[in-house]
Image (cartoon, rainbow, N blue to C red; front, side, top):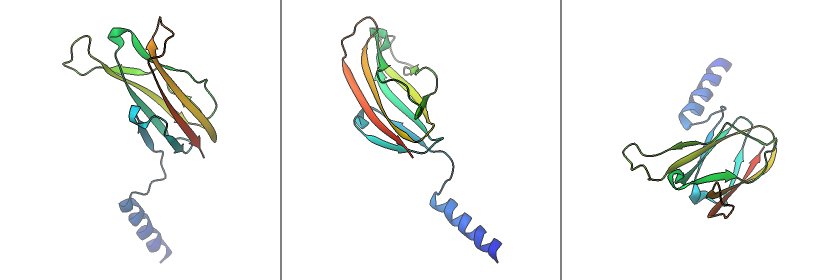
Length: 127
């Protein structure tokens, strides 16, 4: 009887969308200023428009901490049939590691120029 009850609860949880696995959170420029809550193992992707053909890119302006792990360098992609000087998307990937809070600030600027064109900021809490 206990096994049957356990199976019913597991099936109901699966149908309701319950998950004990890591979740993925996607953020973009519209989420600027947003507070995000994650659990260790969760993944967060930050997708920001960039025009590298004009020399612009996003720079992570806040230092690394033990709360989030930056998974490699940001990836950049332009639409397939876009002109060579068209803007694309820079995607930054992070994994929640341990409890705490971290502010991620990204500055949009040219590599040779210290003048910041735009800034986006996210506050991440890992519980």
